[in-house]
Length: 259
Length: 260
Ligand SMILES: Nc1ncnc2c1ncn2[C@@H]1O[C@H](COP(=O)(O)OP(=O)(O)O)[C@@H](O)[C@H]1O
Ligand SMILES: [Mg+2]
Image (cartoon, rainbow over all chains, first blue to last red; front, top):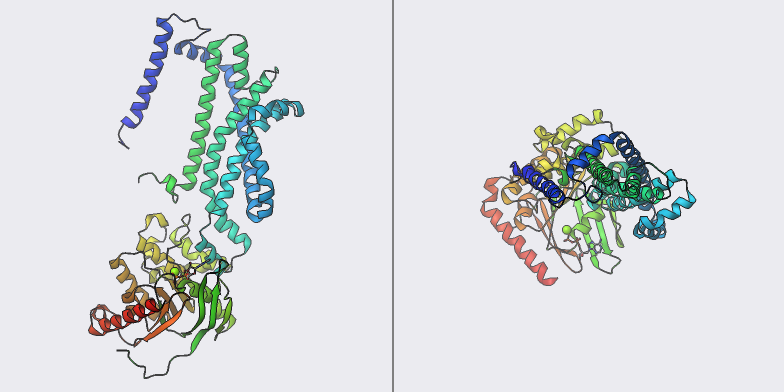
Protein backbone atom coordinates (compact mmCIF):
# COMPACT_ATOMS: atom_id res chain seq x y z
CA UNK A 1 0.00 0.00 0.00
CA UNK A 2 2.79 2.42 1.02
CA UNK A 3 4.35 2.46 -2.42
CA UNK A 4 1.47 1.44 -4.68
CA UNK A 5 0.09 4.04 -7.14
CA UNK A 6 -3.17 3.90 -5.16
CA UNK A 7 -1.43 6.09 -2.62
CA UNK A 8 -1.93 9.09 -4.85
CA UNK A 9 -4.50 7.76 -7.34
CA UNK A 10 -7.22 7.27 -4.72
CA UNK A 11 -7.11 10.78 -3.20
CA UNK A 12 -7.07 12.20 -6.72
CA UNK A 13 -10.11 10.15 -7.67
CA UNK A 14 -11.98 11.29 -4.56
CA UNK A 15 -11.12 14.91 -5.37
CA UNK A 16 -12.32 14.47 -8.97
CA UNK A 17 -15.57 12.89 -7.76
CA UNK A 18 -16.16 15.79 -5.36
CA UNK A 19 -15.67 18.29 -8.20
CA UNK A 20 -18.00 16.29 -10.42
CA UNK A 21 -20.63 16.21 -7.64
CA UNK A 22 -20.28 19.96 -7.18
CA UNK A 23 -20.77 20.52 -10.91
CA UNK A 24 -23.80 18.19 -11.00
CA UNK A 25 -25.46 20.00 -8.10
CA UNK A 26 -25.03 23.31 -9.92
CA UNK A 27 -26.30 22.12 -13.33
CA UNK A 28 -29.14 19.88 -12.07
CA UNK A 29 -30.53 22.57 -9.76
CA UNK A 30 -29.79 25.32 -12.29
CA UNK A 31 -28.14 27.32 -9.48
CA UNK A 32 -27.20 30.88 -10.47
CA UNK A 33 -23.49 31.78 -10.09
CA UNK A 34 -24.19 34.26 -7.24
CA UNK A 35 -25.38 31.34 -5.13
CA UNK A 36 -22.99 28.62 -6.22
CA UNK A 37 -20.76 28.90 -9.29
CA UNK A 38 -19.68 25.76 -11.10
CA UNK A 39 -16.05 24.62 -10.76
CA UNK A 40 -15.48 25.57 -14.39
CA UNK A 41 -16.68 29.12 -13.78
CA UNK A 42 -14.42 29.45 -10.72
CA UNK A 43 -11.47 28.36 -12.85
CA UNK A 44 -12.50 30.73 -15.60
CA UNK A 45 -12.69 33.62 -13.11
CA UNK A 46 -9.30 32.65 -11.74
CA UNK A 47 -7.81 32.93 -15.21
CA UNK A 48 -9.70 36.09 -16.10
CA UNK A 49 -8.87 37.93 -12.85
CA UNK A 50 -5.45 36.41 -12.43
CA UNK A 51 -3.58 39.73 -12.33
CA UNK A 52 -5.46 41.16 -9.41
CA UNK A 53 -5.79 37.81 -7.62
CA UNK A 54 -2.14 36.83 -7.93
CA UNK A 55 -1.10 40.27 -6.72
CA UNK A 56 -3.33 39.78 -3.71
CA UNK A 57 -1.84 36.37 -3.13
CA UNK A 58 1.64 37.84 -3.15
CA UNK A 59 0.55 40.42 -0.56
CA UNK A 60 -0.85 37.72 1.71
CA UNK A 61 2.14 35.43 1.20
CA UNK A 62 4.55 38.27 1.94
CA UNK A 63 2.72 39.13 5.16
CA UNK A 64 2.73 35.45 6.14
CA UNK A 65 6.40 35.05 5.27
CA UNK A 66 7.58 38.09 7.20
CA UNK A 67 5.39 37.14 10.17
CA UNK A 68 6.81 33.62 10.12
CA UNK A 69 10.36 34.91 9.96
CA UNK A 70 9.79 37.28 12.89
CA UNK A 71 8.01 34.53 14.85
CA UNK A 72 10.95 32.24 14.18
CA UNK A 73 13.53 34.77 15.38
CA UNK A 74 11.45 35.90 18.35
CA UNK A 75 10.34 32.41 19.34
CA UNK A 76 13.84 30.97 19.28
CA UNK A 77 15.31 33.99 21.07
CA UNK A 78 12.73 33.82 23.86
CA UNK A 79 13.09 30.03 24.11
CA UNK A 80 16.83 30.54 24.61
CA UNK A 81 16.15 33.10 27.33
CA UNK A 82 13.73 30.64 28.97
CA UNK A 83 16.36 27.91 28.79
CA UNK A 84 18.91 30.05 30.62
CA UNK A 85 16.60 31.45 33.29
CA UNK A 86 13.81 29.57 35.04
CA UNK A 87 12.68 32.80 36.71
CA UNK A 88 12.10 34.58 33.41
CA UNK A 89 10.32 31.49 32.11
CA UNK A 90 7.98 31.38 35.10
CA UNK A 91 7.30 35.10 34.83
CA UNK A 92 6.72 35.38 31.10
CA UNK A 93 5.11 32.09 30.18
CA UNK A 94 1.59 33.06 31.38
CA UNK A 95 1.64 36.12 29.10
CA UNK A 96 2.65 33.97 26.15
CA UNK A 97 -0.21 31.59 26.97
CA UNK A 98 -2.75 34.42 27.32
CA UNK A 99 -1.72 35.79 23.94
CA UNK A 100 -2.03 32.31 22.51
CA UNK A 101 -5.45 31.38 23.88
CA UNK A 102 -7.16 34.70 23.14
CA UNK A 103 -8.69 34.30 19.66
CA UNK A 104 -6.81 36.46 17.20
CA UNK A 105 -10.07 37.62 15.61
CA UNK A 106 -10.90 39.30 18.93
CA UNK A 107 -7.56 41.09 19.14
CA UNK A 108 -7.44 42.23 15.53
CA UNK A 109 -9.84 45.24 15.75
CA UNK A 110 -7.85 46.58 18.67
CA UNK A 111 -4.60 46.28 16.74
CA UNK A 112 -6.18 48.18 13.85
CA UNK A 113 -6.86 51.07 16.20
CA UNK A 114 -3.32 51.25 17.57
CA UNK A 115 -1.28 50.30 14.52
CA UNK A 116 -1.38 51.19 10.85
CA UNK A 117 -3.14 48.59 8.71
CA UNK A 118 -0.14 46.73 7.34
CA UNK A 119 1.52 46.52 10.72
CA UNK A 120 -1.70 45.37 12.38
CA UNK A 121 -2.15 42.56 9.85
CA UNK A 122 1.47 41.57 10.28
CA UNK A 123 1.05 41.62 14.03
CA UNK A 124 -1.97 39.29 13.84
CA UNK A 125 -0.03 36.83 11.70
CA UNK A 126 3.04 37.07 13.91
CA UNK A 127 1.34 36.57 17.23
CA UNK A 128 -0.30 33.27 16.28
CA UNK A 129 2.87 31.95 14.66
CA UNK A 130 5.06 32.95 17.57
CA UNK A 131 3.70 30.61 20.20
CA UNK A 132 4.25 27.21 18.54
CA UNK A 133 7.82 28.16 17.71
CA UNK A 134 8.44 29.30 21.28
CA UNK A 135 6.73 26.34 22.95
CA UNK A 136 8.34 23.70 20.74
CA UNK A 137 11.82 25.19 20.83
CA UNK A 138 11.66 25.61 24.61
CA UNK A 139 10.60 21.97 24.93
CA UNK A 140 13.40 20.89 22.60
CA UNK A 141 16.03 22.80 24.55
CA UNK A 142 14.90 20.94 27.66
CA UNK A 143 14.96 17.53 25.99
CA UNK A 144 18.71 17.07 26.06
CA UNK A 145 19.83 13.50 26.82
CA UNK A 146 21.07 13.68 30.44
CA UNK A 147 23.89 11.24 29.66
CA UNK A 148 25.08 13.42 26.80
CA UNK A 149 25.00 16.41 29.10
CA UNK A 150 27.15 14.49 31.57
CA UNK A 151 29.53 13.61 28.79
CA UNK A 152 29.85 17.28 27.85
CA UNK A 153 30.54 18.13 31.49
CA UNK A 154 33.11 15.37 31.74
CA UNK A 155 34.86 16.74 28.66
CA UNK A 156 34.96 20.19 30.23
CA UNK A 157 32.60 21.78 27.68
CA UNK A 158 31.87 25.48 28.08
CA UNK A 159 28.31 26.79 28.29
CA UNK A 160 28.64 28.05 24.72
CA UNK A 161 29.87 24.67 23.44
CA UNK A 162 27.02 22.92 25.23
CA UNK A 163 24.51 25.30 23.69
CA UNK A 164 25.79 25.12 20.12
CA UNK A 165 26.82 21.49 19.99
CA UNK A 166 24.22 19.88 22.22
CA UNK A 167 21.15 21.96 23.04
CA UNK A 168 20.53 23.52 19.64
CA UNK A 169 20.88 20.28 17.65
CA UNK A 170 18.60 18.52 20.17
CA UNK A 171 16.01 21.28 19.80
CA UNK A 172 16.18 21.37 16.00
CA UNK A 173 13.50 18.72 15.21
CA UNK A 174 11.17 20.26 17.82
CA UNK A 175 11.77 23.71 16.34
CA UNK A 176 11.06 22.52 12.81
CA UNK A 177 7.85 20.84 14.00
CA UNK A 178 6.80 24.09 15.62
CA UNK A 179 7.67 26.00 12.47
CA UNK A 180 5.44 23.75 10.39
CA UNK A 181 2.50 24.47 12.68
CA UNK A 182 3.40 28.15 12.75
CA UNK A 183 3.36 28.34 8.94
CA UNK A 184 -0.31 27.37 8.75
CA UNK A 185 -1.20 29.59 11.69
CA UNK A 186 0.64 32.60 10.23
CA UNK A 187 -1.51 32.33 7.11
CA UNK A 188 -4.66 32.14 9.23
CA UNK A 189 -3.47 35.14 11.25
CA UNK A 190 -2.78 37.10 8.08
CA UNK A 191 -6.22 36.26 6.68
CA UNK A 192 -7.93 37.20 9.94
CA UNK A 193 -6.01 40.49 10.06
CA UNK A 194 -6.88 41.28 6.46
CA UNK A 195 -10.52 40.46 7.06
CA UNK A 196 -10.67 42.80 10.01
CA UNK A 197 -8.84 45.49 8.07
CA UNK A 198 -10.71 44.75 4.84
CA UNK A 199 -14.09 45.56 6.32
CA UNK A 200 -12.61 48.95 7.17
CA UNK A 201 -11.93 49.38 3.48
CA UNK A 202 -8.17 48.84 3.50
CA UNK A 203 -5.64 46.33 2.29
CA UNK A 204 -5.33 44.25 -0.86
CA UNK A 205 -4.60 40.70 0.27
CA UNK A 206 -6.61 37.61 -0.63
CA UNK A 207 -8.89 37.94 2.37
CA UNK A 208 -9.66 41.49 1.30
CA UNK A 209 -10.64 40.14 -2.11
CA UNK A 210 -13.01 37.73 -0.39
CA UNK A 211 -14.67 40.45 1.65
CA UNK A 212 -14.86 42.68 -1.41
CA UNK A 213 -16.33 39.92 -3.62
CA UNK A 214 -18.92 39.10 -0.96
CA UNK A 215 -20.07 42.73 -0.89
CA UNK A 216 -20.38 42.77 -4.65
CA UNK A 217 -21.95 39.32 -4.78
CA UNK A 218 -19.11 38.27 -7.10
CA UNK A 219 -19.23 34.73 -5.80
CA UNK A 220 -17.07 33.15 -8.54
CA UNK A 221 -14.24 35.49 -7.64
CA UNK A 222 -14.79 34.77 -3.95
CA UNK A 223 -14.32 31.08 -4.69
CA UNK A 224 -11.25 31.82 -6.80
CA UNK A 225 -9.68 33.81 -3.93
CA UNK A 226 -10.57 31.03 -1.51
CA UNK A 227 -8.89 28.54 -3.81
CA UNK A 228 -5.73 30.62 -3.79
CA UNK A 229 -5.72 30.84 0.01
CA UNK A 230 -5.89 27.03 0.23
CA UNK A 231 -3.18 26.82 -2.37
CA UNK A 232 -1.00 29.24 -0.36
CA UNK A 233 -1.48 27.12 2.74
CA UNK A 234 -0.45 24.00 0.86
CA UNK A 235 2.62 25.73 -0.57
CA UNK A 236 3.72 26.98 2.86
CA UNK A 237 3.22 23.57 4.42
CA UNK A 238 5.06 21.83 1.59
CA UNK A 239 7.96 24.29 1.74
CA UNK A 240 8.37 23.86 5.49
CA UNK A 241 8.08 20.08 5.20
CA UNK A 242 10.75 20.12 2.54
CA UNK A 243 12.98 22.25 4.75
CA UNK A 244 12.47 19.83 7.63
CA UNK A 245 13.25 16.88 5.42
CA UNK A 246 16.40 18.48 4.03
CA UNK A 247 17.72 19.25 7.49
CA UNK A 248 16.73 16.04 9.29
CA UNK A 249 16.76 13.30 6.68
CA UNK A 250 20.07 11.80 7.73
CA UNK A 251 19.35 11.41 11.40
CA UNK A 252 15.85 11.99 12.67
CA UNK A 253 13.15 9.32 13.00
CA UNK A 254 10.44 11.67 11.76
CA UNK A 255 12.08 12.02 8.34
CA UNK A 256 13.40 8.52 7.75
CA UNK A 257 10.21 7.12 6.31
CA UNK A 258 10.10 3.37 6.03
CA UNK A 259 13.51 3.05 4.42
CA UNK B 1 39.07 -21.19 44.38
CA UNK B 2 40.48 -17.66 44.54
CA UNK B 3 43.88 -17.58 42.96
CA UNK B 4 46.34 -15.77 45.15
CA UNK B 5 48.81 -13.24 43.93
CA UNK B 6 52.50 -14.00 43.98
CA UNK B 7 53.53 -10.53 42.86
CA UNK B 8 52.61 -7.53 45.06
CA UNK B 9 49.36 -5.75 44.27
CA UNK B 10 49.89 -2.73 42.01
CA UNK B 11 49.70 0.78 43.41
CA UNK B 12 46.26 2.29 43.94
CA UNK B 13 45.02 4.84 41.42
CA UNK B 14 42.31 6.12 43.68
CA UNK B 15 40.51 5.21 46.87
CA UNK B 16 36.98 5.83 48.11
CA UNK B 17 37.14 6.34 51.87
CA UNK B 18 33.93 6.07 53.85
CA UNK B 19 32.02 7.47 50.92
CA UNK B 20 28.31 8.10 51.37
CA UNK B 21 25.78 9.53 48.97
CA UNK B 22 22.33 10.72 50.00
CA UNK B 23 19.98 12.19 47.48
CA UNK B 24 17.70 15.13 48.23
CA UNK B 25 14.72 12.81 48.43
CA UNK B 26 16.50 11.14 51.38
CA UNK B 27 17.43 8.01 49.42
CA UNK B 28 20.75 6.75 50.78
CA UNK B 29 22.43 5.26 47.72
CA UNK B 30 25.80 4.63 49.34
CA UNK B 31 26.92 4.53 52.94
CA UNK B 32 30.42 3.94 54.27
CA UNK B 33 31.82 2.70 50.97
CA UNK B 34 35.52 1.87 51.11
CA UNK B 35 37.15 0.69 47.95
CA UNK B 36 40.42 1.00 46.10
CA UNK B 37 40.92 1.11 42.35
CA UNK B 38 44.36 -0.21 41.47
CA UNK B 39 46.54 1.06 38.68
CA UNK B 40 45.93 -0.88 35.48
CA UNK B 41 43.42 -3.36 36.83
CA UNK B 42 40.13 -4.49 35.33
CA UNK B 43 37.79 -4.01 38.25
CA UNK B 44 34.14 -5.08 38.11
CA UNK B 45 31.45 -3.77 40.41
CA UNK B 46 28.86 -6.54 40.64
CA UNK B 47 25.53 -6.20 42.35
CA UNK B 48 21.75 -6.19 42.05
CA UNK B 49 20.19 -3.12 40.48
CA UNK B 50 19.59 -0.22 42.81
CA UNK B 51 22.57 -0.96 45.04
CA UNK B 52 24.47 2.19 44.07
CA UNK B 53 26.93 0.98 41.43
CA UNK B 54 26.10 3.76 39.00
CA UNK B 55 26.25 6.27 41.81
CA UNK B 56 29.73 5.06 42.77
CA UNK B 57 30.85 5.38 39.17
CA UNK B 58 29.47 8.91 38.87
CA UNK B 59 31.25 9.90 42.07
CA UNK B 60 34.54 8.58 40.71
CA UNK B 61 33.96 10.48 37.46
CA UNK B 62 33.29 13.67 39.42
CA UNK B 63 29.80 13.97 37.94
CA UNK B 64 28.44 14.09 41.49
CA UNK B 65 29.95 14.80 44.89
CA UNK B 66 29.82 12.46 47.87
CA UNK B 67 27.77 13.66 50.83
CA UNK B 68 30.16 11.87 53.20
CA UNK B 69 33.74 10.60 53.04
CA UNK B 70 36.17 11.43 50.28
CA UNK B 71 37.75 10.21 47.10
CA UNK B 72 41.53 10.23 47.26
CA UNK B 73 43.48 10.20 44.03
CA UNK B 74 46.99 8.88 43.80
CA UNK B 75 47.56 10.75 40.56
CA UNK B 76 48.37 14.16 39.18
CA UNK B 77 45.50 16.55 38.55
CA UNK B 78 45.77 16.05 34.80
CA UNK B 79 45.35 12.28 35.18
CA UNK B 80 42.26 12.71 37.32
CA UNK B 81 40.56 14.36 34.42
CA UNK B 82 41.77 11.67 32.06
CA UNK B 83 38.54 9.71 32.29
CA UNK B 84 36.49 7.95 29.66
CA UNK B 85 32.87 7.17 30.44
CA UNK B 86 30.66 4.62 28.71
CA UNK B 87 26.97 4.61 29.60
CA UNK B 88 24.49 1.76 29.44
CA UNK B 89 22.96 3.37 26.36
CA UNK B 90 25.30 4.27 23.52
CA UNK B 91 24.37 7.94 24.09
CA UNK B 92 25.48 9.08 20.66
CA UNK B 93 24.56 12.38 19.06
CA UNK B 94 22.04 11.28 16.39
CA UNK B 95 22.77 14.34 14.26
CA UNK B 96 26.46 13.56 13.93
CA UNK B 97 28.32 10.90 11.95
CA UNK B 98 30.32 8.16 13.65
CA UNK B 99 33.49 10.14 13.02
CA UNK B 100 32.06 13.32 14.54
CA UNK B 101 30.71 11.43 17.53
CA UNK B 102 34.13 10.00 18.29
CA UNK B 103 35.66 13.43 17.66
CA UNK B 104 33.47 15.03 20.35
CA UNK B 105 35.74 14.83 23.45
CA UNK B 106 38.72 16.15 21.49
CA UNK B 107 36.62 18.82 19.83
CA UNK B 108 35.36 20.03 23.19
CA UNK B 109 38.97 20.15 24.38
CA UNK B 110 39.77 22.48 21.49
CA UNK B 111 41.55 20.06 19.15
CA UNK B 112 41.07 20.76 15.46
CA UNK B 113 39.43 18.14 13.27
CA UNK B 114 42.62 17.72 11.32
CA UNK B 115 44.83 17.27 14.38
CA UNK B 116 42.33 14.84 15.89
CA UNK B 117 41.92 12.65 12.82
CA UNK B 118 44.75 10.16 13.56
CA UNK B 119 43.47 9.59 17.11
CA UNK B 120 39.89 9.19 15.86
CA UNK B 121 40.94 6.76 13.17
CA UNK B 122 42.93 4.73 15.66
CA UNK B 123 40.01 4.61 18.10
CA UNK B 124 37.69 3.48 15.31
CA UNK B 125 40.20 0.86 14.27
CA UNK B 126 40.40 -0.48 17.83
CA UNK B 127 36.66 -1.12 17.88
CA UNK B 128 36.59 -2.37 14.30
CA UNK B 129 34.48 0.42 12.82
CA UNK B 130 36.91 1.97 10.34
CA UNK B 131 34.51 1.32 7.47
CA UNK B 132 31.63 3.09 9.21
CA UNK B 133 33.21 6.46 9.94
CA UNK B 134 30.69 8.34 7.79
CA UNK B 135 27.61 6.40 8.92
CA UNK B 136 25.01 7.94 11.19
CA UNK B 137 23.97 6.28 14.48
CA UNK B 138 20.54 5.46 13.05
CA UNK B 139 22.19 3.26 10.47
CA UNK B 140 24.05 1.11 13.02
CA UNK B 141 23.06 -1.95 15.06
CA UNK B 142 23.00 -1.83 18.86
CA UNK B 143 26.39 -3.50 19.13
CA UNK B 144 27.97 -1.13 16.62
CA UNK B 145 26.56 1.89 18.42
CA UNK B 146 28.12 0.63 21.62
CA UNK B 147 31.43 0.26 19.78
CA UNK B 148 31.20 3.90 18.72
CA UNK B 149 30.52 4.84 22.31
CA UNK B 150 33.64 2.94 23.41
CA UNK B 151 35.73 4.50 20.66
CA UNK B 152 34.59 7.92 21.83
CA UNK B 153 35.67 7.08 25.38
CA UNK B 154 39.04 5.81 24.13
CA UNK B 155 39.85 8.67 21.78
CA UNK B 156 41.39 10.79 24.52
CA UNK B 157 43.50 7.83 25.69
CA UNK B 158 42.10 8.01 29.23
CA UNK B 159 44.01 6.62 32.19
CA UNK B 160 40.71 5.45 33.66
CA UNK B 161 37.80 3.98 31.73
CA UNK B 162 34.47 3.89 33.58
CA UNK B 163 31.78 1.65 32.09
CA UNK B 164 28.23 1.45 33.43
CA UNK B 165 26.62 -1.81 32.30
CA UNK B 166 27.66 -1.05 28.73
CA UNK B 167 26.59 -4.39 27.27
CA UNK B 168 23.45 -5.04 29.33
CA UNK B 169 21.11 -4.26 26.45
CA UNK B 170 22.92 -6.40 23.87
CA UNK B 171 22.27 -9.96 22.82
CA UNK B 172 24.61 -12.65 24.12
CA UNK B 173 26.57 -13.23 20.91
CA UNK B 174 27.26 -9.53 20.48
CA UNK B 175 28.13 -9.24 24.16
CA UNK B 176 30.71 -12.07 23.99
CA UNK B 177 32.29 -10.45 20.97
CA UNK B 178 32.46 -7.06 22.68
CA UNK B 179 33.83 -8.69 25.86
CA UNK B 180 36.72 -10.12 23.86
CA UNK B 181 37.38 -6.87 22.03
CA UNK B 182 37.25 -4.87 25.25
CA UNK B 183 39.89 -7.12 26.84
CA UNK B 184 42.01 -6.64 23.74
CA UNK B 185 41.72 -2.85 24.05
CA UNK B 186 42.50 -3.01 27.77
CA UNK B 187 45.69 -5.00 27.12
CA UNK B 188 46.71 -2.73 24.30
CA UNK B 189 46.17 0.56 26.12
CA UNK B 190 47.10 -0.55 29.63
CA UNK B 191 44.43 1.68 31.12
CA UNK B 192 42.48 1.05 34.29
CA UNK B 193 38.89 -0.08 33.82
CA UNK B 194 36.03 0.05 36.32
CA UNK B 195 33.20 -1.98 34.87
CA UNK B 196 29.71 -2.06 36.35
CA UNK B 197 27.62 -5.14 35.62
CA UNK B 198 24.91 -7.29 37.11
CA UNK B 199 26.11 -10.35 35.22
CA UNK B 200 28.19 -12.79 37.22
CA UNK B 201 29.47 -14.49 34.07
CA UNK B 202 30.54 -11.26 32.45
CA UNK B 203 32.35 -10.00 35.53
CA UNK B 204 34.27 -13.25 36.00
CA UNK B 205 35.24 -13.42 32.37
CA UNK B 206 36.52 -9.86 32.20
CA UNK B 207 37.91 -8.88 35.55
CA UNK B 208 41.11 -9.14 37.46
CA UNK B 209 39.09 -8.23 40.56
CA UNK B 210 35.40 -8.17 41.45
CA UNK B 211 33.72 -6.13 44.17
CA UNK B 212 30.29 -7.47 45.10
CA UNK B 213 27.87 -4.75 46.22
CA UNK B 214 24.95 -5.10 48.59
CA UNK B 215 21.97 -2.78 48.60
CA UNK B 216 20.28 -0.40 51.05
CA UNK B 217 22.64 1.09 51.88
CA UNK B 218 25.07 0.34 49.10
CA UNK B 219 28.46 -0.88 50.21
CA UNK B 220 30.85 -3.72 49.46
CA UNK B 221 29.89 -7.20 50.61
CA UNK B 222 32.67 -9.32 49.12
CA UNK B 223 35.81 -9.20 47.04
CA UNK B 224 37.11 -11.73 44.53
CA UNK B 225 40.53 -11.77 42.91
CA UNK B 226 41.14 -13.51 39.62
CA UNK B 227 44.60 -14.18 38.27
CA UNK B 228 45.19 -11.33 35.82
CA UNK B 229 47.59 -13.52 33.86
CA UNK B 230 44.86 -16.04 33.15
CA UNK B 231 44.24 -15.91 29.39
CA UNK B 232 40.64 -14.86 28.71
CA UNK B 233 39.46 -16.76 25.69
CA UNK B 234 36.82 -19.26 24.67
CA UNK B 235 38.81 -22.00 26.41
CA UNK B 236 38.58 -20.05 29.68
CA UNK B 237 34.86 -19.45 29.13
CA UNK B 238 34.23 -23.20 29.26
CA UNK B 239 36.93 -24.17 31.78
CA UNK B 240 36.26 -25.61 35.27
CA UNK B 241 38.16 -22.64 36.78
CA UNK B 242 35.71 -20.27 35.15
CA UNK B 243 32.73 -22.27 36.33
CA UNK B 244 34.15 -22.44 39.84
CA UNK B 245 34.76 -18.68 39.95
CA UNK B 246 31.26 -18.04 38.68
CA UNK B 247 29.84 -20.24 41.40
CA UNK B 248 31.85 -18.38 44.00
CA UNK B 249 30.76 -14.99 42.68
CA UNK B 250 27.12 -16.12 42.50
CA UNK B 251 27.28 -17.27 46.09
CA UNK B 252 28.75 -13.96 47.19
CA UNK B 253 26.07 -12.12 45.26
CA UNK B 254 23.26 -14.23 46.72
CA UNK B 255 24.69 -13.63 50.18
CA UNK B 256 24.88 -9.89 49.55
CA UNK B 257 21.27 -9.82 48.40
CA UNK B 258 20.07 -11.67 51.50
CA UNK B 259 21.91 -9.22 53.69
CA UNK B 260 20.41 -6.24 51.81
N1 LIG C 1 19.62 11.31 40.95
C1 LIG C 1 19.04 10.53 41.87
N2 LIG C 1 18.10 11.06 42.70
C2 LIG C 1 17.52 10.30 43.64
N3 LIG C 1 17.78 9.00 43.85
C3 LIG C 1 18.69 8.42 43.05
C4 LIG C 1 19.37 9.14 42.03
N4 LIG C 1 20.23 8.31 41.39
C5 LIG C 1 20.08 7.12 42.00
N5 LIG C 1 19.18 7.18 43.00
C6 LIG C 1 18.80 6.08 43.90
O1 LIG C 1 19.97 5.57 44.48
C7 LIG C 1 19.94 4.15 44.54
C8 LIG C 1 21.13 3.58 43.79
O2 LIG C 1 21.00 3.87 42.41
P1 LIG C 1 22.09 3.43 41.32
O3 LIG C 1 23.41 3.96 41.75
O4 LIG C 1 21.57 3.87 40.01
O5 LIG C 1 22.06 1.86 41.44
P2 LIG C 1 22.58 0.75 40.41
O6 LIG C 1 23.39 1.42 39.36
O7 LIG C 1 23.38 -0.20 41.24
O8 LIG C 1 21.38 0.08 39.84
C9 LIG C 1 18.61 3.73 43.94
O9 LIG C 1 17.72 3.47 45.02
C10 LIG C 1 18.17 4.92 43.15
O10 LIG C 1 16.77 5.03 43.15
MG1 LIG D 1 22.99 1.52 37.29
